[in-house]
Image (cartoon, rainbow, N blue to C red; front, side, top):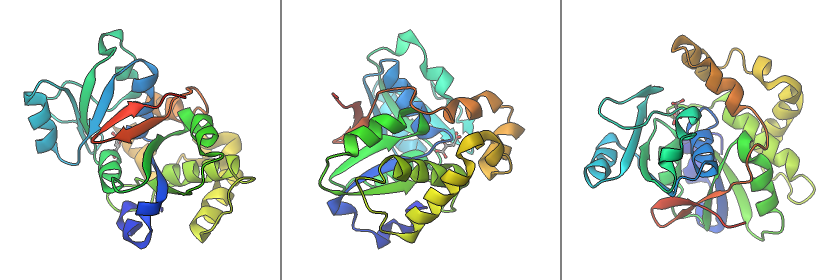
Length: 230
Ligand code: MLT
């Protein structure tokens, strides 16, 4: 599903949903769990995030790639490489990523995917009996290239176990095969890359495009993401 706005066309209730927001929400979450964060509550609105902050959670709020004033953490994966966050419970809202997760709640399982944990996600999905839906967070209802490439990368890893049932998967897979040798240059003109560059956030781009850095699968349990025991 290349944008959450098309999610109503899919049978979410009977699938495992893998939500991807490569730049940068799901890459942040995967990094946070790799560095020992205890849980992340993804919420759709800044108000919900502020309420949780008032109840004692550390809170991360991003809109349009900028940190919302008054919150503790931004949306850079590097901010989560911090031993002071070990075991922390964090509330998080982002423009697209956390919204996509909250829209997937009725799925059999909701997993958080990024290039950083691509292999961990693929390994978990091998041998599962449910259909898998990759939900690309996109940008405000629009399709984006980086999340589509993640969908294609996951399809590539799973092509011997799952059939690619939708043309959107075939498209994503072809794009990934076309661009995989150099994703940074393949994505050079992508809208969110240009947005991050305008804000001087270049180093997050190269970081988020690294494959298989962490053997971590964040999973939604109730209203919180936790690290799955593998
Ligand atoms: C989002 O959820 O839209 C993103 O993570 C935006 C960002 O790069 O901060």
